[in-house]
Image 1 (cartoon, rainbow, N blue to C red):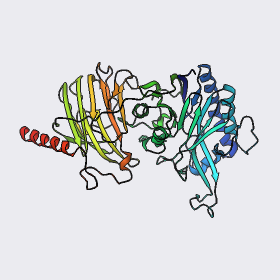
Image 2 (cartoon, rainbow, N blue to C red):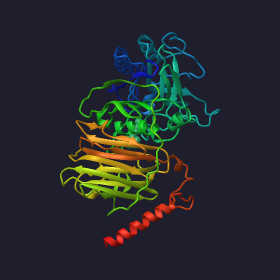
Image 3 (tube, protein in one colour):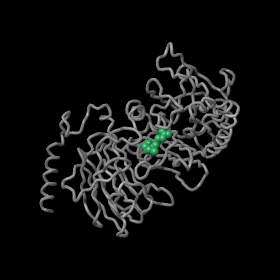
Image 4 (tube, rainbow, N blue to C red):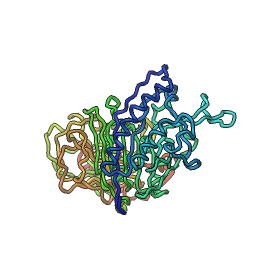
Amino acid sequence: YDDTSFVAAVYEHAVVWTSIPGQPPTRQEAIDFMKQNLDVYREQTREAKRQGADIIVFPEDGIHGFQSRENQYFYLETIPDPEKIVWNPCDDPDRFNDTPVQQNLSCMAKENNIYVVANFGDKQFCDSSEDSSCPNDGRYQFNTDVVFDNEGTIVARYHKEHLFMTELQFNRPPSVEIVTFQTPFGKFGVFTCFDVLFRDPAVALVEDCGVDTIVFPTAWMDVLPLFVSVEFHQAWAMGMGVNFLSSNTHVLDRRMTGSTISTPSGAVSYYHDMNSTEGRLLVAEIPIKPIKNGVRSAELPITQHDTEFVSDLFGDPFTFVDLTKESDYVIICQNDLCCSLNYTKSGISSEIYAFGAFDDLHTNEGQYYLQICALVKCANSSRDTCGQPTNDAQTTFSHLRLAGNFKFPHVFPEVLTRGIGMDLAVGEWEYKNGAIISTSGISKPLLSAALFGRVYERDDGTFKHTSGAMEVSPHLPLLLILFSVHLIGSVVTV
Ligand SMILES: NC(=O)CCCC[C@@H]1SC[C@@H]2NC(=O)N[C@@H]21
């Protein structure tokens, strides 16, 4: 690294694992399995260093795979808290019992003079007579990210806060952990996979701790059109104005692929491949201090929408309007959110696109409040397929401007096109003043473009829609004008 940039590496790993619930392995069998993954990690760490990397990130569950709670136990080590104990497992391997994974990772970091970020399971024993939250089996099993510095010392340990619904093998930590680590190439924050949908610790690391770069081990299952790994993780980097190093596991029968090295200007390097069974190393030079976007200006539509319909997008009833013309300016609203789209497209007439708004509680696979403006390719020519997953498209957009009147600050811009696999159209659009803008067009067929707003403020139930009794919107006068225009438009149409 120099004073302004460093070299980041992420490795998407095709994890070697087996799990037969009810038939736990012996500890030695578990170690032998993990060793197979660690051998790959060692080889990739060496290669990353050869390419100049200062830090390498490995994926969630990449060392032990996906286990039942009972089986997971045999893959766990007790990982000491680096805030309390300074430990270099490579230099001092016998300080604690039974720590082969930590020794292996620590020596990998030391031998290659590189920071290593890895995810595996931490066990912490507890006593229910002293700790009322202590699990029945007398131990916490934490989904854990561990960071080794370039000499092999453990410098950070993070226990995942927001476990995904299938992660019954792990426990949530007693309180949310906000974990940072300082390097010669900037301040880093760490969180894991499903955490990215929630405020703490993710947003706190950026807004309260001022980190420059997030390291993000993940085991992310794609869901088209708005939850594709590389699309969502690039969007988070752009929306939050930080570097984002996402390393995914590569398990195709679970729809897990897609890793990125992203900056606030978009992905510098990414990998997404549903055909190959191979892992992939990404290495890229990125700025130590990411340049953040300017403050968003409120974008407010001035006319109202055409014929509306409601269709489901990943469980959310979006209010959509379809794009009937080759070039148009359309507005669509739902609850407090109004979205505008200016576009020019060319494609075959059987393909339909819809532009929609969603402003409500998302309830599918977790509950969280969203405000989303989304342009989507419908799965077929029927309107009720708008929002359904499809990776088939032929229509291109030669001009695009997508905005919304978001009044909450966390908005993530997403663009997904059909390339050989999933494609992010890097360099063909920008996120500026709160809008997705493509002036010269997006060359590949468009699957989706969206402003994904996450309304953390409503999660605790104290903020409601402006139509509710709790709060009066500062935009109420404008919404009334919009609504009147809508009514007039409806009367004229009738
Ligand atoms: N390991 C995890 O924490 C996986 C969670 C990420 C999955 C994302 S979040 C919402 C979408 N639902 C999915 O099935 N995949 C997406």
